[in-house]
Image 1: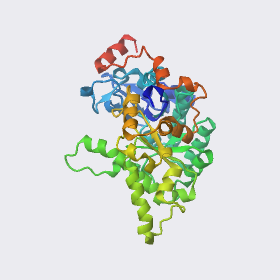
Image 2: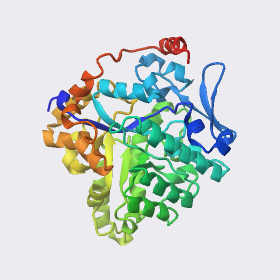
Image 3: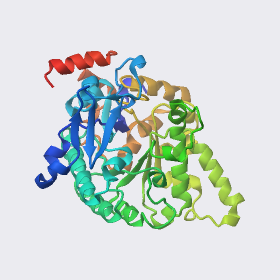
Image 4: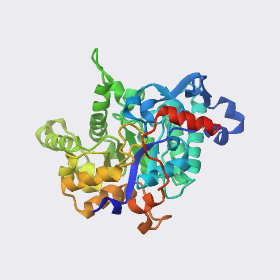
Length: 417
């Protein structure tokens, strides 16, 4: 398949939250208690909520920056490509990359929304979570029907509030929530027990998928003295194996066989080893009594999970071993791992090297994600207009050149923002 003919649905991108979220969606009586957008004299943008501060690091907004400007330093909107925080510019950047639809994870709300939800005043935090979700579903995703798959955050420190929010966002058409990949690394109960059972029941009953993004398991790593950021960046995807193992061996799927789990930004290279290891474990270590509901680990993976990758050339050679129907693709815009604005070219080259046929490519690039998240990619855009070439034809005026942070600052100031 030519890369121009591919249809691309990315199930992991990121949004840098714009300033107006809570002004427009929180109850009027609570707006002065909601997260407040604060810009420092140095131009650094942060959110302040219940006395705590959350900002954005440079690696979260590097789209089109030269590599020598990347880093963990805090940044403001003025330094970013507008597609990071402006939905209209985001869609233009998606068109320039040939991407039909995108799922967007939060940034300032924290990994899985944990920063927003994990505040001392739990009721106020739950209100903030609902306001965030209304902005994300109604404004961000609702501005361009057919271009986004909505993703909700949860008030994680209150199970009953989680259930209520799942029911509420599901009624609004949201088919996915983000959830910590290893909650015990976030001062929350783990999967070995019944604490999360009401949440899993609500997700199953509403057919809402649970998306576990990398990064939330960093707390499990005890870094040696002298370890650099490289260690965490390289290890992060491999920690998805911990989340998968915990969910499988804890008996979660025995109790909730319809629960759907997406491993976000975890890559797929670790999956065949984990499945080989666990399939043999079930037989070789039968004395433990582990029961995966009568299934092998491979069968459980293929019935309840999907994995996604940005670029994974080696693993694509064993795609059939993992399960073609469980593989999906992501762009990761605007993060440092993203292949924007040449994602079709990167992906097509890997597909060709792995010898995947057109049917497998269609499943990986859009069909599997659409099925898993109950998303109709052609409800608003005809199929013949949804491929890479057609979308790029709408974006011939989009500047995708490497652009310095200073140039973005100059443009931002010229626009009077």
